[in-house]
Image 1 (spheres, rainbow, N blue to C red):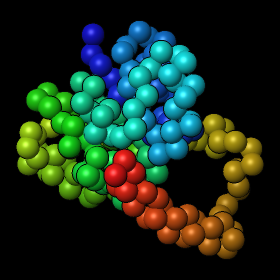
Image 2 (cartoon, one colour):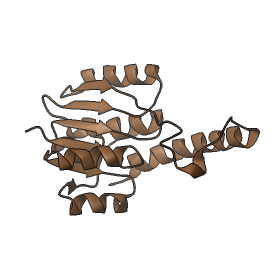
Image 3 (tube, one colour):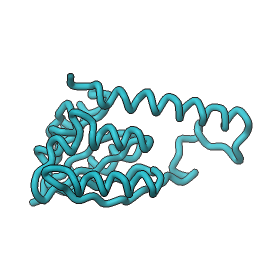
Image 4 (cartoon, rainbow, N blue to C red):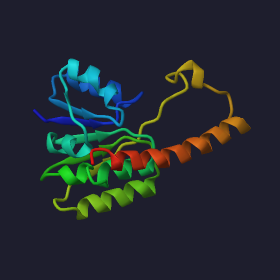
Length: 166
């Protein structure tokens, strides 16, 4: 049976990982905030510190993180998926990022040593699935400003992924 890894256990990654555990797959997980991974250990998953370790213990790795810089960091950072890649590894990115960034990541993965395969499979959340506190009818100026602040924050978090584990 294929070994499945998950990098990112947020609102969308967590249910995916839980379903893989329930289906009987051997699952390895990590998250930027490791405390979020503890319930998965109790459910039968192996919790590791870095995306590299997830790749080392998996046949396919699902990434579900917040932005293109985060995907870049978890894939090619010092302790990223590429550092733990092995022959036959498939990295499936389900983050909602730009197609151009996905193409760059795929080319870098193919050129890595060892090379590994990638699949871009972005998902999105519907208004019905969002927590009530985050639903809006249309973006207001404050929502757009908050979005810009989050983008800046995401860039800072991407460096957190690459700095962790050193």
